[in-house]
Image 1 (cartoon, helix red, strand yellow):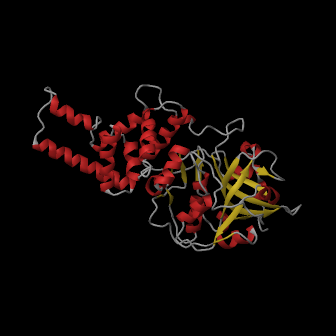
Image 2 (image 1 turned 180 degrees about the vertical axis):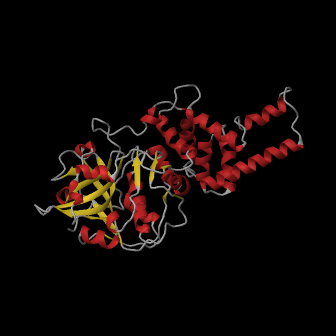
Image 3 (image 1 turned 90 degrees about the vertical axis):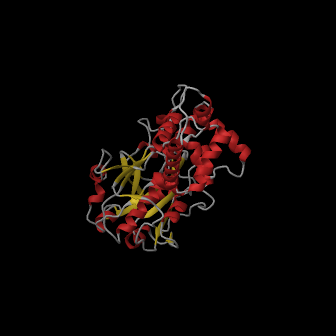
Amino acid sequence: MNEPTADGSPTDCAEDNRASASAESEFESASKRHRAQDGISSNGAESATSATTSGNLPVVGHASVAGADGAAAQATAARSDRWRVDKAAVQAAVEAAISEFHTEDEGIVFLLAKGVMKSVPALRAVQFTDLLNSSGEEWEARRARLKRLVDLTGDTTHPGNPGWQSFNDFLKVAPGWEHKDAYMFHVARNVPLAHRVQHSGLCYIHAPAVVQRYLVSLHQKDVGMIDMTKLLRETFTAKELEKHIFEDEGGSSFQMLKRILQPGSKFVTDGTHEDNLKTYGPGLVSGFAVDPDFHAGHASYDGELKGKVVGHHAMALIGVRRDPSSGQLWYLLQNWWPQAQFVEVSREYLISSEAKVSFVITPQLKIPDDFSTQSQLFAENENVDKPEQMMSEDPACPVPGD
């Protein structure tokens, strides 16, 4: 879900990424920078024409041609490595961008190399042309999403807490977790907390990435965490990229967790959350229904949801305790909002949210080599804009088993 504003309402995902109203958009400017870095002419095919027709330009010799060919080859190799597509696909994408769209815009070349809308060329022609030229908030937001994919090197990381809520801050407003009988995964297993922050709607990837990191940390020290920016750029399919950039759709956190774990990993959703947490480690909380009150960022939530459901959220279940006076069961959830990194919810509230809690029963010895990682415990990312979405693979959630 989106980080709430001061008045409790969700922020506009694209608000901080509005394209410039000037004649040359920020998107085009960034693409020109990329082309300059890669040794590619900013004028694409037109530059070659100018070189042969303008009397003011020097004649291109063999050495110059060889140098240009070498720079182009280096640019192709760099794109191939960065995007995880073969060189032939990159070269074909450059040629298609020039012939079909009269540009070498980095974003357009990326989409073509990834095969986005390849099966519907007529629609692709319209959509890509609009992506380059159309005005309005919707197209500006689409350009911003694509720009972040091709511009960012990776996640933004921090060697220490950059000012987000710490666990000690949370304990000041939820002291029940200091009771000797409270079970907290990171304390019981001596595992450092990994913090992530979403500035828009990244929960469906944040939650699986953190759950995975905790599970792997049971088997090795100094484990990294998946770099989400690279995850999208390197591993998303053409259809997933299309949905993200053009349709602004999120995804299922449960399916994402299955995707990034070791192949063949098994899950359990029945039994008590307390037993499963102690036996298997943190659980993925998916399809958590959110009402406006949850956006207020309180430390504790009891009873039932009070308002209209405005979306679904994904978090990690990392603790459980019973109130020594009432016997009421409380769960500790890790969240991704800068000043609401942790929240406790009662058993009744979790049931009311209709969330599904999944525990991984297959030991996670490492993060699969297919995924790029980063080493810091504090990370944030700005290149996805949608919250958790309930998908056909993630049916209506059952009542928790405990």
